Length: 499
Image (cartoon, rainbow, N blue to C red; front, side):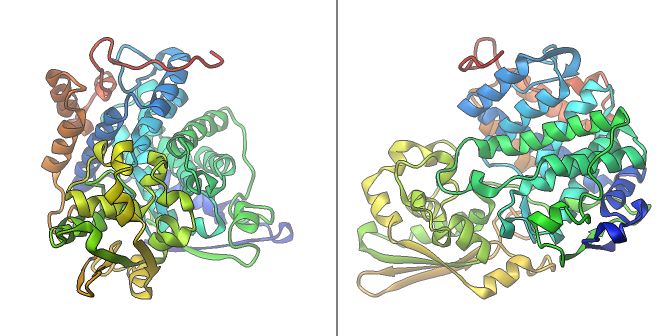
């Protein structure tokens, strides 16, 4: 890996194109390096993981709306849409919109956390859609996906967006554009322009993840993927982009991030170095914000030690800055304590999540968020007693670059009314690579079967799993099989829009 020093340059000291960070990203994307077997294996896992959560959410309102919008834009040679068979094709950017929303709706797929946070599996829908529309095979798709993960993960390692209240999809636009560039075998110039255009149009505020969180949280990454496809389309036609988008005096960094004196050291692979970043990412066993995964596992154990919930006086969670300020009491969001809050808000409330995990000893993507579950009287009473604090130790572990130290959990201290204390801590989730039960292919397949049970015919489920596990060997024709059809009449239809 090489560290690239990224700083703002005034127009009077304009960087040469080859010295600009977007060009460095494009060079990585244009490098025809082979994809290592371990990376291919993990990419297959994540394709299965995405499909699992997409089908589990297939008839939820935001997903239905996104799918209806896509189906209104048919294209005979286009891309497939989750829920429909391979014979149903739409324009690639609209397939990315529909499928990306389905993948993101339950907040249940993979994650990478460092200077910022991300769901790098969000790269899969737009890159796959372009692969299907452009007649690329499984090997090309694997190369494109490896790039998408590589670029997004390394941006997240070095450039913090959230402290400036910029949404994390600003790293997804460039990574998806770069991944599409690799998929299509584009030259460095076209990828460079596409990356810049994608960043320019995908930078938005974090209000989508603040207060009363709406369905836009699910749409935000699919919107970024859609815009990345459109950026590549424009640049393939010879159009340019705002430049230099990272270092310019009126750039994203200068005005939306750390300002004119900004300095970032961003790692990227050198020429000929394999793209391995996906191996540093991790998926979710539980349908909730990633920082809650270890705390859910810990709560399952600790809840068994409490006999009567009304005997609890206080629950304190000592955790990282991010957990405290984004999903904890440090966010100062009253909605995080509201029994009437939306699912999107509840899965960003560690207080609610810990209360239910303590009481139930399980976490279910539907039951744990049901309105009647959130309104249960004893749960509401317990919920109100839970608070978070930032512990510098956990913040340091969150930001550590050492995988053996890096952690996303915390310590939970339950104080009973009689003064007795029940305490425990867990650094990483059980499913994490360094956790108690690190996930393998069988776990991803089990998650798929669990989440799609009752929604898919058994034959269709097994057909998809077979196709997905042959990913690198798929022909262009077979790549259309990387979709899933629900039984006839089982797809919801939403309200009519403009078309």
